[in-house]
Every structure is written in C-alpha cells, then in structure tokens.
Image 1: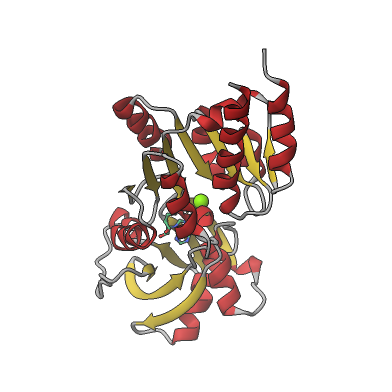
Image 2: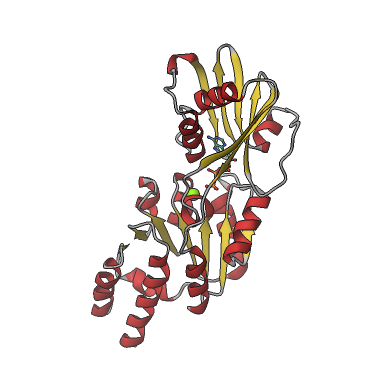
Length: 286
Ligand code: ADP
Ligand code: MG
C-alpha cells in the first residue's frame, strides 16, 4: 500500500506548480538515475527569432515572403518566427500546395514556384546544393526556389535561465547522468550541452528517433530513466519512460496526457524541487 505521506507530498509539490498523476510516482521520483531532456521548448523557450537573412538573387524581402507563405500552414515554432519576421498578412490562396517533412522543414507551391524551407537534410533530400554553408552553432534554415538554392534565414532560441542550475542540482541529488536529445544540428546541440553541463547528447534526430534513443539508453544503463519533453513528438517517449515530465505551460496536449508529472509553469526548477520533496518524504516514511 502507498504511505499516506506520499499523498501529502503530492500536495507539497503541487504548491510548486508540479502536478503528479498518482502517489506511486512520488516513490518513482526518488529512484531516478538517468534524466533525459528534449532541447527545444524544454531546455530552451522554443520561441525563435529571425536574426539574419541572406538572399542569393531574390530581394531579401521576397525571399522572406516566399518562406513565410510556405511556412504558413506549419505550426512549428520556427515557422511561426519566420511568419512573424515577415510581419504582413499571408495570402493563403497563393499557396497552391503545402507539405511538411517532420524534422526537416516544408515544401509549398507559390506563384507556380516550388519553395523549400528547412534544414540541410531537407535540401539534401531534394539534392539541392547549398551554396553557402554555415558551420557555426546557429540554426540555419535554407530556402530553395524551384530546386535552386536561394538563401538562408538564421533563427535563434534562448536557453531558459534556470536550466544550468537545475542540471547542477540534479547531479547533487545523485541523478547519475543527464542526457539531451534533439533534432537540431550538431554544432547547436554540442554548444547547448557544453553550456549546461549535460553529460551526453544525441543530435540531428528525427522525431521517431527519440523513443529509440531513449530505449537504447535505458537498455545500456539498466537504470530508472526519466524523460522531460514538451512536444507532440515527445509523447511516445513520455508514455514509455519510467517517469515522464511534460512542460505543461507551453507543451502540447498530447505531451501533457502522456506524462506522469506535469510542470505547470514551464520552469525547470520544479523538476529538481519535486525530486527533493519526494526524497525527503521517503526518508521520513522509511
Ligand atoms: P527538436 O527535436 O529540437 O524539438 P524538431 O524535430 O521539431 O526539433 O526540428 C528539428 C529541425 O528540423 C529544426 O531545428 C529545423 O532545422 C527543422 N525543421 C523542422 N520543422 C521545420 C519547419 N517547419 N521549418 C523549417 N525548419 C524546420
Ligand atoms: Mg521540444
């Protein structure tokens, strides 16, 4: 049976904006050995801003217009940032067709032109040569018009202020290993991981790779493994992890439904706080 104090622990963590979906998870929280974070929207705010545009041939505002129209049917935060940078109304009738490639970008037909907007992998998929490679740790979104490289748009995201401290606290709580999984490119991923003191990072993952990587880590370490995520893409991993934490403030409904613990205010500190409270409760019981 579940000790009564585990129910009061649920109340205590709820005061810090953490919703635990059952007293059994209080015990589980004390047993976490590995913790795996999604990057975008979890360790970072997931709100992008366009910081640079470079066009080859077209005028810059034309490039931005094509990109914004092509992205207008996408709900991805990068798509939102490109639409915001364009700033004008989208003429949806001008978008004759649109398609999204999960973890890559979008393709659309505008003014009888095929427009591609996405990362290096998207351009590789369509065998388009990138005329100017950006190797820095920047999130670069390439644009192609009629299968010709047309330019790029740099977008950037901000790491949450509390992220570094939370990871330090987790290690002090004897969580033995902290991982990060991301669809973002190598340079950005390694830079964020180094900044935050993350032990191991897997990058350039497709959405379906998240669960596979989670299961691999779990199998290799044979340890109680928690996962923290926010997106629709994270739902299968949240459902299969020993403890799934969803960032509920901005997270997708499906992520929240699939999780065991929901962080209501989007602040990562809630995770280490919840583990701390759970441990204290357990020490009192046993
Ligand atoms: P994460 O795992 O970091 O949350 P995603 O799987 O959503 O990231 O996306 C990974 C990468 O795919 C993005 O960094 C971006 O380069 C590219 N991408 C995905 N969707 C889009 C889109 N709608 N427009 C442009 N690029 C996109
Ligand atoms: Mg995410």
